[in-house]
Length: 482
Image 1 (cartoon, rainbow, N blue to C red):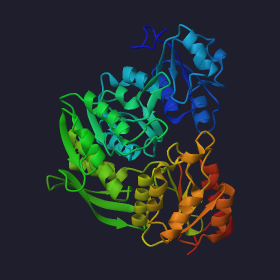
Image 2 (cartoon, rainbow, N blue to C red):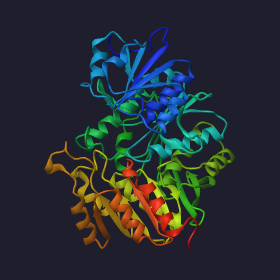
Image 3 (spheres, one colour):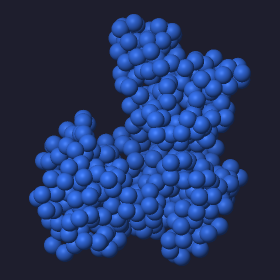
Image 4 (cartoon, helix red, strand yellow):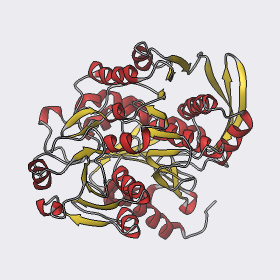
């Protein structure tokens, strides 16, 4: 059976290959809510996803085995972690079972008739998607959404929604082994937000021009009566935006939509900011998202919400009640008054912006940056020099050993030792340590009350967060130390 162009008639049973991923598990829940019988497979399934799927009554088969398809589902959804060489993928291709990707079924099932707001860009997608969805929710529009993280207000990554709007994080990563186009090309945007365009995903893109070509394709599918909200002071984004034939709103420093930070309360960790349009105030708001990059993420979300009809009063309610996003400057605990922060940052620009925001949020408190080179790009040398400039706002830096580099040519591998040498030359107190146990032992011994420890990784980092929470609690006790 060829790749489907539309959902099969009489569709009842759906099998998801790669179900334990965040987005795939969320899709499983949405399809279950819609009345389908859902099964899935993956190499493993662990809490919280295993608990979530079990609670939905969804069977998860462990291993990508050909026998997983013996029950002959009406449709198979294939995740982009699945490689064509896997036995289950080979069995699927040899069968007559219809199949598609996650972005395709989202487009068919949820976006065909929705007013789709697609949030794209190299940086800030998850934050901007989360706050946009919450502004529409707080404004009574009951949007559907799919977010590449967990916004605490929703405590889930996706839902179908009861209204006509759907807010979706538009990833530029490829769709599936049988579809190498970016995911966002399946998302039928009526409104698109473009936060930034830089080189990233070195495992699938060759250079910045290659990245731009993908974003230009997104511009090409925006309808003429649609809207593009673009970070106009980002050179890459502004260049790509020239391809759009619809109305364009620009935001950023000196742009039509701008913003300013009025104050930051370092005790409460909140920021008061004003959004302006054409030099006139749209409103002054308070938010738990602190820092200049979060200012402009919120300006973009504000513009999108205004386009959907929300007024300043509704916006103020939404911003003030937004609780933040897991793994984006998330405060995990304060043992001994040491703030343990969990953040997803891994690209050098994201590391720089995150540390700058934490400096604003926590003032002059001593700031540790602990970073794991884990993503496909950060494990390569492509940004070796750029990382040396990314940690300037930190007082002390610990670089973990790069995640598995065995499939990367030795000449192309990122070097933690070289980065430490470059940071030391810039006057930054830096070291490299082999694993989470060594890092935890060092921090549990050296951290002082009122320090801030920012753990930066797009993975679990060997459970470092919990090792720090446990170790510092044991050292300082459960109470706050002044």
